[in-house]
Length: 226
Image (cartoon, rainbow, N blue to C red; front, side, top):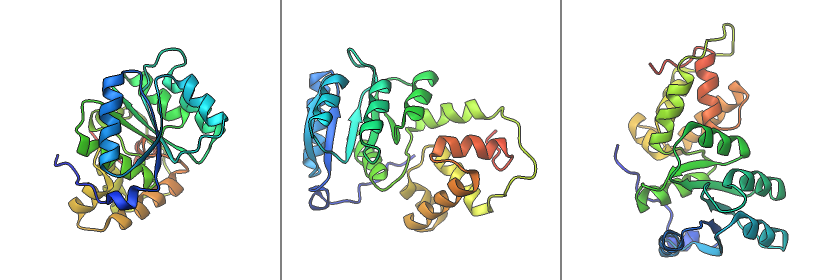
């Protein structure tokens, strides 16, 4: 898979406030440098969820939180849940080394808007961040593959509102871990059109994120990912 190039300029990112929660200082510094290079405001860096949540309760405001899951003290999953309760409009992107199914689903159920594995490149990080800010729910390709394997065994439901052929195409490619721009390039349509198709899928399937849409589409017999 080719990596999506970033589309936002540093000037466009200047008003985006980010918080980083990561207990490994070297990695936290590296991510902070990548974010600063792209013009983002890193308004808070924390090594524990307790410190981050205390800062939010004290008045710290941000547009998006990048968080690890394996943190000392409160887990990243519990922290995500509390952050979403404190600030429902704040977005959360998981950036972690964990790829096991239990942690992935726990993070998504807690309210994470995206899931990225640390082994990815800086370009992948920024592209994923941009997609979350644009309203997407991007998944690391490794995670997308694992989720597909999980949902392949679900039984279809007859008589459900059908997805169009194009909606199925968009959903299937998204489920494989492609970003919205990559889906657009593959299908020869605009990124805006991809976003609209995904929204239609969410509406028809009565879900709010990509993993739930994939599982529901398979369960209803609209997707065959075998």
